[in-house]
Length: 355
Image (cartoon, rainbow, N blue to C red; front, side, top):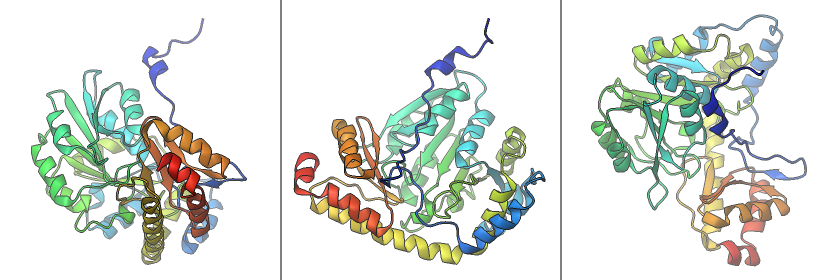
C-alpha cells in the first residue's frame, strides 16, 4: 500500500525550464548573460564562508535595504525564494477552497496555472488580445464573487508586451477592493514605458501587491531571491506562509550588494535594450511578426509552427523556447549570440519558411 496523495496532483503539468546543451547558444531561458556585479560576487564569496550558519529568517537587512531603495516601510516588503515562490504564497494566503478563483492572462508566466492548482484553487485563464497583450477588459469581466487573486504580468512573459500606467489604473478601478491584484514586474528593469511603476501605482491601493526579482537584470538567477511590495496586512500574511530559511544567506548578501551597485546595473540594461532593438528590427526586416518588447526577450507568434522553428533553430546551434501552438520566445544574449540566432532566422530559406 502506498501513501495517499492528492489525486488532482496527477493533472498538474511540471514546470519546463529552457533547454541547455554545451555546444549550443542558449537563448531559451530569461537569464542575463552578464554575471553578478563585481561587488555582489565579493559578497557571495564572503557569505559562503558562513554557510554553516542559518540565514536570517526575517531577511531583515535586505528588507530594510529594499524599503530604503523603494521609499516604503519595511512592513511593506516581503522576500521570497525567487518571485515564483511568492506567487505560490500569494495563492496560499488568498485561496482556501477549490471554488476560489485565480484570474490570469494566457499565455503568460507558466507558473501561474501551476501554483494555482498546487494551492487547490481554480484557474481562470483569459486569452490575450490579437496584439499579444493582456486583455484587461476581459480580465475585469472575468471577475466573479469567487475571484480571490489576479495575476497581471507586466511586461508579459513570454510575449514581452506591456501596458502603460493609465491602462493599468483603469483596470484596477474595476477590481473590487477585496480581490488582490498581483502586478508581476519580474522584467521591470528592462521596461521603458514612462511612469509604469507598479509600486507607485500601488501606494494608494491596498489590494495591489508588486513582485520583482533579482534573477533577471541583477544576474542572480541561480541564487533565487525575489521580493513583494504591498500593504502591511498582505505582507504579514506572506510572512506566515513563508518556508523558514528559504532565502539563503548567500542570496541575501548578493542582493544587498547588488542594490548598492544599482547604477552599474542600469548601465548594463541599456546594453541589452540596444540589442533587443537590433534583434527585433532584423527580424521585422526578414518578414516576421515581432510585437514590441519591454523585457529581455522577443516573441515570435508562430502558432502551429513554433515547435518546428525551435527544432530548426536547435539544429542550427541556437536553443530558443517554444510554446506549442502559440509562439517562440528568444532571450536577448550577447551580440555574438544574437548574431548567431539572426544568421539562422533571417537566412532566406528560414525567413521564407517561417517569416
